[in-house]
Image 1 (cartoon, one colour):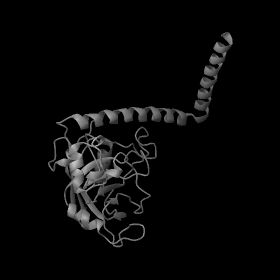
Image 2 (cartoon, helix red, strand yellow):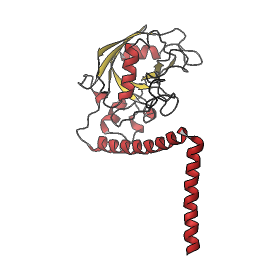
Image 3 (cartoon, rainbow, N blue to C red):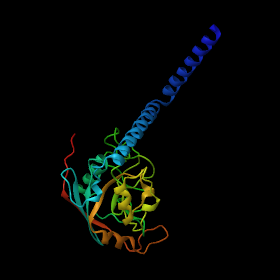
Length: 266
């Protein structure tokens, strides 16, 4: 028994030693990865709890389903060379994405930026100053490592927001790599029959009858919804494109006007 006890103690000490060695070798990377794992677990639990509430609460409110701009929402108008698109934004559910977008818009970051990726019956994408899908950064890049350590800011997934037709969402190159690029869902195909009532609230399943891309749900931060100008989105989506889905005739954002701002608590 003593040998087993000593062996068990040795294993514990060995594992503890390995942890210390990893911490020593990897430094901040070890701490960051440990915090990330813990944060991911907490986020998964939060999402599960929120989804349960959204599925069971008969009075659940899904802001995308209304064209009215609520007190806790912002509103913008994107003026493009193809026409105007008006959207409302949801800081309650995606505060980082909305603050990032509004700040970039106010500073003229998006002015002159082209729609570099357009796929009919899918989405239209823009927000990259380089115009090729490889550029763009968040407002925190190089300024606040607690939000963006250089790879982009975290995803904000909500059971109250979905990739419905007209939904505005952050484009990314993987989880938690949000910078400045965004897309608007354009697909018009009824996608409701592929959705499970165990994962989607009834109101959202019904909304997907008008189109959208449910395959993108859970992987991209939805933070707004088109309220006027879907015909412009459709027009852009119908553009003739090259082999990289880039419009052959440039379509640009001329400016983004803030119609209703939002004050973020610091």
